[in-house]
Length: 131
Image (cartoon, rainbow, N blue to C red; front, side, top):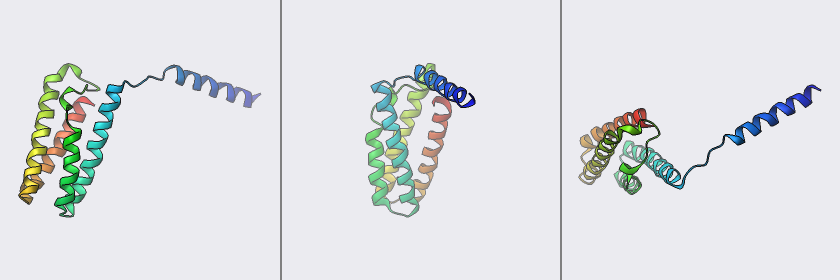
């Protein structure tokens, strides 16, 4: 009898979970895919920078720059009423990526270090507010 009750409870839980499952729109799937690329490539970029491998860091950075196309049109998970602030933060993010690319080209290690910190802080601020 106890095992029957356990099975019944599990089935009820599974039914509840399935009933409340939501579908993800293609737009949100694309947005998530872009953010995943950005996160993964940023980790690779920082690892390469720590190893003074500017060539591979630049390759990762280029993938990030492709993935951020249209970022300002993304829909934040929270605080969607603050779209102006979201757009401003995405603009700053893109500008800092461009500056980092230029610093890598010129092999300006102090600028690179500063920009990595600015980008990291920007990501944290944006995620804290909008994710």
